[in-house]
Image 1 (cartoon, rainbow, N blue to C red):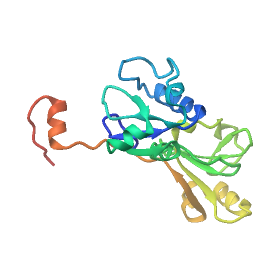
Image 2 (cartoon, rainbow, N blue to C red):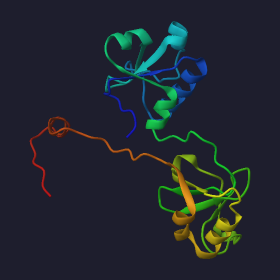
Image 3 (cartoon, rainbow, N blue to C red):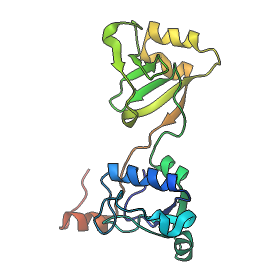
Length: 199
């Protein structure tokens, strides 16, 4: 579901590299500091260095304090790797002959080391099946062959189409759906009026 503003969670960023990555990612998502300033302004990591942690509790933006502060006040403190996992971000490298599925349901196979793609299904090298390069933001699932030599599975995909993938390939990564959960009270506050749920 991802880490949302309003969550009593702090992400520990012990290195400048970790901090820089998180600030860029949050800026790309449109998240700012509680002050309204963009995350790339200034370098707050210098204040607490390897104990720096980023707080998501306030709904209007992020803030920062040392690790010990959040531990003292009962925050859930997570690593950057755990944050990435919760956000559904890829934590492994794609390989040639991996099959990727985009969020629109289309599947493509990686046919070049530079990430060139071809659409899954009959007609492996048809020019109209080429999709260009990988858009990691749109990847929903990644499949990889179950055997070391995946050429037989690969040619089966090209011959019979996308429906064969689930049987012959392992699902090795899947993006978590970003579904926000609300209590009835929270929904009422957001809508600004009373309501009832109907089926």
